Image (tube, rainbow, N blue to C red; front, side, top):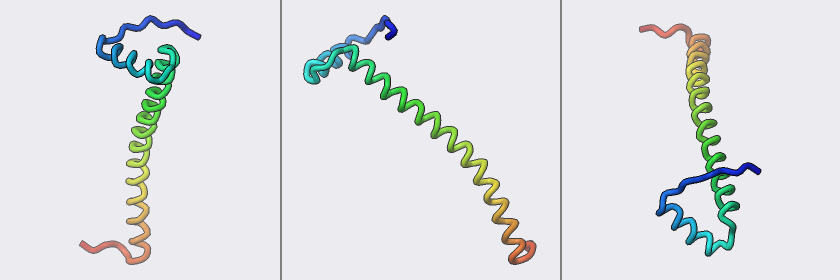
Length: 79
């Protein structure tokens, strides 16, 4: 385990203490779980951004392929 010094805003600290008294959980365990949850959330956001970018690339290529198939089936589009 690593030791971390942490400064919290008063209102966040107070709310956390109130919640901890109801959960019967240590402050350390609560903060560890909160950071783990937030890390998972951030990883999902990174993945979502990456998937959107890759989807755009694949989407453009898919449209190009569909256009090629249409030309094979129906011949070149006359303008």
